[in-house]
Each structure stands twice: as structure tokens, then as C-alpha cells.
Length: 139
Image (cartoon, rainbow, N blue to C red; front, side, top):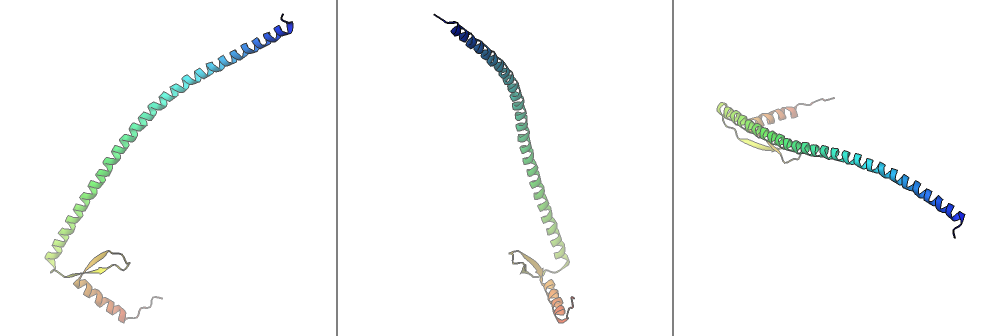
């Protein structure tokens, strides 16, 4: 037979089990509510992400068009410079007789060269001789 103590122990365990079920049910309701809220936020964030990806794609396309435009403008500028230089050379050749040009390396040691006409080279040589004959006091 059952004793009174055993019945009371059973009642206490049942009461604790009921309290535990109530607590778990309340926690579950909170979690369901949070899940619904998080799903709504996820959908909103996904829409925003899609919008941003579209903006990035458009930006890249625009950037490519801008780069192409800059390259085209630089090409046109180069063509303009070449045409301008050739027209200047044509005008110079019409005004002055053709001079022999010599290449003189740049003093910095780089491989770049510039051209000096024979007339300019002779003038510079004369100026250099005049400077070397005179004594300069720089202090």
C-alpha cells in the first residue's frame, strides 16, 4: 500500500512538472514571436541586399563607361597633340631650313633622350665656353 508521504511526494513532483511545462510553454511562445520578428527582418535585409547588389552592378557598369570615356578622351587628346605638333613642325620647316638633330642623353642616367638642333648645340657650346672663361662667384 501507499503511504501518505509517497502521495505527497508524488503531488510535489506533479506540481513541479506542471510549473516546468508552463515555463517551457512561455519560453516557446517568446521564441516563436522572436522567430517571426527575425524572419521579417531577414526578408527586409534580403530585399535591401538585393537593392544594394543592383546598385553595385550599376556602379560597376557606370565605372566601366566612365573609364571607356576617359580612355577615349585621352586618345582624342593624343591625336590632337600629334596633329598640333606635326602642324608646328610643318610651320617650322617652312620658316627655317632643315637642321641636323643630334640626340643627347639625359644627365639623370635614364634612357630617355631629347633632341637639340645643330644650331642650338653650337649656340650652347659658345655659351658654355664663355661661362668657363669667366669666373663665377656664387657666394
